[in-house]
Length: 301
Image (tube, rainbow, N blue to C red):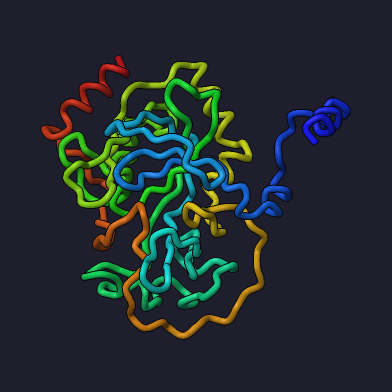
């Protein structure tokens, strides 16, 4: 078979060599091709390829460049209690936090705002059973020509207040924007909060990209791999349910609100309160963020 494949590949016309897989082929492969992603399960950075863990980085921090991001915060709802090693997908999810996606197995409501799973206390404690997250497409610092990885940030890493130079992702992006810097133009450090009971990341800027890195990362942002990395559709794999481009399914009638039940405890999230509303004109605390401000100003000089 190996020799046959080698002969077959050498016989391909030039225009078909090295073209990669298109979206049709990826959707037909289903869970067999889960792409590449970074997991934060167990408080360590895990490199996942096609559903298999291929490397573990036990450092407390990792440097990446964000090349693209899902345009909206998404939501996922898992039915029943979590079981270690389970391969089930969420029964309901939303790519825009407004309404369930067309492919949901059991839509919980016609609108997310009206959903019984979107109420405090529907999950563990005062948490909501339906969880927030956001997907990023990132490349590794020092390997911008390399693979694009999908990174899913749970609510604990997205929302909340800054603690000195420790910024949740939303606060980090707003901080950079206050200095007129896009998040895609910098190397970003993501570091685990060692005081948190579950995996939680903080973010801070490391350095600006040089011109070659900037041009490469801009090109990476529009590749099929980056598009797949931020897609919010689900198939089941052996590692966990991960977003993937799948064919749209026929709409199903909305199911009656499910009774309150303990949600599936996802590997990368904890029960969290509602996202903290940040006023549009709020600015970072000057004293707390002195080091970051000095760094930004140094780049500007």
